[in-house]
Length: 189
Length: 384
Image (cartoon, rainbow over all chains, first blue to last red; front, side, top):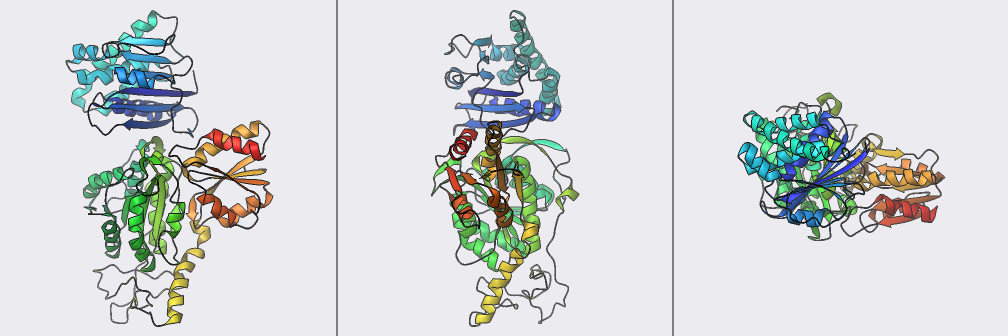
């Protein structure tokens, strides 16, 4: 497993990309006791602008707060895929929402194509759960993360009345990722 | 008011959140401010939390009024703070100077962004090193601390309150746009770890003989709050121990100014704080503060792998500057490299110190981007 791991969650304002960063930071930092450093960037719009959160996970203190070679990039929009995947680390993976991203600019990279938003709608009836579906997928595909810790962090993040729907969304995302992985040689490390 | 806002030991917080929570933990019960990127979230969180803990939040019309309100609240006995960035800090300088002369405990957070003027609101910089010391006119004492992580922002903000209360002076904390918005895992210290300090109050009779600026052997006069029953006059004009103007008395003018400088100078050992990293055998000393000091460590580790003996000296209190400790390192160093995100403000401070003659090299960056470890590493390898 890599010691220093970088992730980027990119999409459109309103898709919950910032919250994905918060939940993943909580899971890796507090639940698993790793060092984490989370940054967020967004345009002036509250909905509809390109935005991303970026998380560094390490066993040791993190000096430089910039993601420069992400090991995992999640792209929840075509724009996010176009602008946020260029600096992918060698051996890094791209996870896309297959309904929202039609073309992946980089060739020869590992791309995990999952209909994230569609799954959210099917499982919980709400598109807004897409980021929780994505968290389930990321938990499976990014070996640095522990699936149970991630699930716990998701549950704790929201009021209890959403637990059932969120667990379903998370597990559906994880299952979709597992399905893709079982077709591949091995889990990304 | 409750002392701490949160119980869990470890939390993921942004720098701005850590500043607000550190302030609350130290007993902040008043905040006045005017929003400005990248400091706004400090005001935002203060406005949410202060009323819950019995404190007061005041949204002001501008930065002049913000600093004035903070000073007024402190006179009324509150632990008061404001937060701003470079442009707002410029506007606060006049009242900051009032706070120094009238000896008002208060805390000013400056979240540095790329200047000058409006500059670049969203980009980090370290251009307020000199402003924090000399932004206001006249000779005056100040304490400025420059943390380098989210955890240290929490602790140093709390310590800023303690020092403000103990030495009756404004204290500034320098953060920056990068630390303000990044999240790190921090350990929330227990209340007793913070050694919460409260200002000394007078115990003399509340009669006409009361002298609000009469100092004891510590040089720090006890401070009554407005409403305590003492009758006193406060002014930004140079005053004697009665608080009334002493503008016709050379001796009293000198006495006042000397005393307020002395109350900081004499306590420098208690106030000053610095970190040394791999300096024991270091021939090249990097001097860096805040966020730059983090990457400097990486550069040092890399240089040491190449056999170059490099080390870091990081002033945590920027003012008073830890002169003596750095001079000790400077004396045995072959080269001193100052690394900073401005055009060389820290470099000038180091240049003034004994034993640094002819040894100083610089790495600077003024484009709003963070300094990288490689920039410092390359300089080390050039001058070694």
